[in-house]
Length: 297
Image 1 (spheres, rainbow, N blue to C red):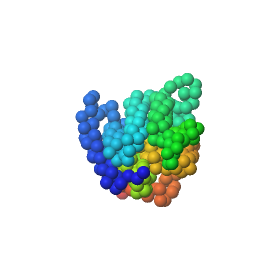
Image 2: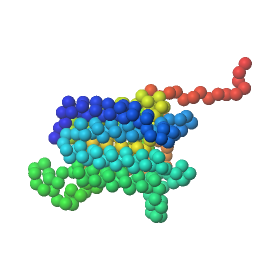
Image 3: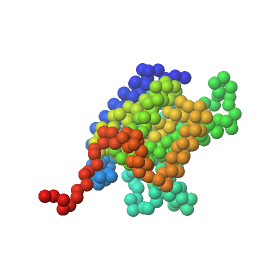
């Protein structure tokens, strides 16, 4: 199944439009914007309202750009679940809690303690598996019914891929524009391929384009709600697009990067790699100059 150019364009435009409209409406959020304000890496206030706006864009664009009802439903489940649990973590996380990272939250769950991050892991994981079950056909290309074991394996691989993608994009949301650039770079070739996942990838691309200016200007940030939603949507696009061997390879890469993040800083790696450093810094405000006291005339 292919997704035609018109549907891809509609998915991208619908996602971008919904993102911008939602962001404008969210400025009037009940209770004011203070609850959604956080401090960024410069110590300056930044709004997380871009997260729900990005989720709305990805949801609308995913439905408009989907090549089938099954694809639209899978995208809605994955994106909506990731956004919902991400927003819960954004708004209710205990900032005094020292539990950090996937390993920390899973360790807490193993000890019987549920953190907001642990709840997010469980919720996004469940939503990812459900989305994968919806996206995975029970019949092969020749029309014959697939074996339960083969179908179940595909669902587990695809569900893990969607969940891991949601988590990795969230890990990248540490500097202005970084996560949006990453999802845009990955989504672009999927859009051009024109396969079953192209419409959803176009929605991710449109959402990223709509939110990039405010993110780079450091007025907005995705937060967990937006980053998890875009990651889940992009993962679902890959699941719809790719064969099992490709999905297994993508999943292995995502797991490797996630495990690496527990030990190394992506920001430090990017800073030491010229190409990554230039792409990462593109469009961003320059770093504040270091003021040296006592050197004036």
